[in-house]
Picture 1: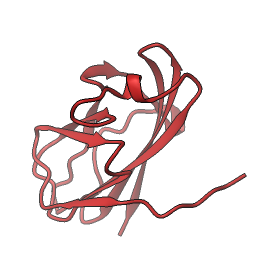
Picture 2: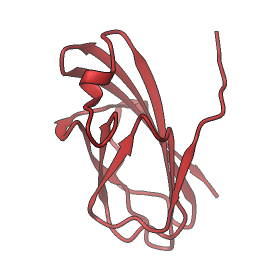
Picture 3: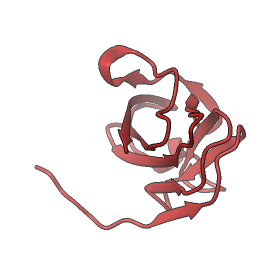
Length: 130
């Protein structure tokens, strides 16, 4: 079954090399409208005061999209965290990306599956829209 829903998104101006935190409780899409200026880390949490581990039950799945505008020099998401702890995603095509896509809107889609206590599998996909 496929279910589609309207979700709140957050629109921000620029991506720098600092950590970006996506809160499950307030957004499923994060959109940066100015060109990225450095590679970045993305950290998934339920909210500022609640961990994703606490908010999700084992077997639960969420999908989050991170939209990033790229200029002539493209950057990319080079690290993924859940609740501040590093996780190694499983990448579409079985290869981790090593760059963004110049002069495009990159969409980073993460499907997060809770497989146990503080244990997650992250499926990661990078798509370019130009």
